[in-house]
Image (cartoon, rainbow, N blue to C red; front, side):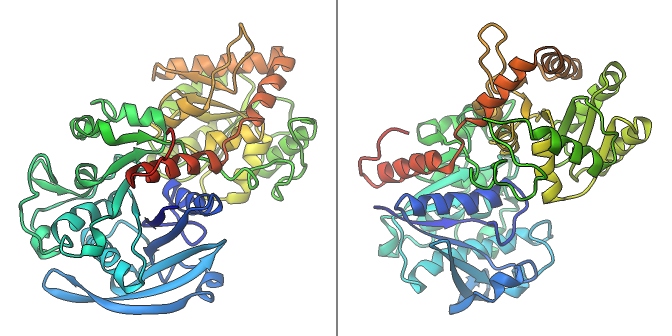
Length: 485
């Protein structure tokens, strides 16, 4: 069985900002349960680590890392959780801050992180068969292994996998960093290397130098090879298409189960959906909407254009005028979009509730108490919320891109097949039309609606399937028979 070191900038349950943190929690656990020897390395954000984990940390070792012309302290803390060993890179100058990202020196912070990972492997005596990297924060490591650590014989057999969770974020910096941070020459600063419009691009370096690259859904792997979704790296991705894979993310099927979810007022299942109506009433009361037997549409999302919130706003006014439906929005993000949803709440107080906050318990209540879950993302590498909504019998209405296309089967009124609703044409009028079509099914064909709910709730989105595909990829890279991806 392969030995894996999983490198990430964040991981739940310690800290997360989005899908990367969720995947970095669930995937290593699933791989461990499937028999893979796996350890995880991530920064030690001292101010963000919950106290219950702080108490479990032990100091393993420390050493200095050369960052440009100076040496930086690197402490290694460790703990084991659910059978997975974690290494946390400790340097208060770089990671002892109130946030994870968004600092003027992020380039240097994550340059240090990547250099520290390269040094770590010998200090903790864990030389993996596969180094699994995630997003731009760790994407430069294959370049470092080739250009800076080529002399370390123990590293020569290491295979590298780079997972792209969101192509938008690439880590683009002035080429001076090659010397001022990494102390490597300019031989890789080429169009086929790390050069990107005169800058250094960490993610491009990873794509070109890693042994395998994958995205978190099959459709997104295809989409990013086109100019529409490729974020100016589509040519690089097409050139590397032979090593590009798409492996769908999963969700925790035990955590997201309406039969056992402690955040719900009433438990229910695909076999007995009746108590879901109780959760709907509790949701309406929780957000201050009238308790009424009307369709409830929910949004749990970052309020950004990428998530299609501008499209939804453009469709919402006419939709509310022609419908008695209630719309509940939970999330934070772009202040302009936040204010727009608040404006709708003021204009339609009986129909709209704008919950501009982060609230895990309310999110669970929305998954359970709503009828339709809106996810009109402009692009979506994987998406998790649509899978969570389906587990609760809340049918997703999605823009058919990326992971949304791979997980939601649009309702076919001829055959009765489907687990939700979808649209291809990214225009407000089209979104509004599909919302109205979904409500007609809900109001006029309750038996069909319940059939769709049951079909959605019985889908298997567990991590075991994803873990098996990653295991197959690891084994193929190591020259073993990994089976089909």
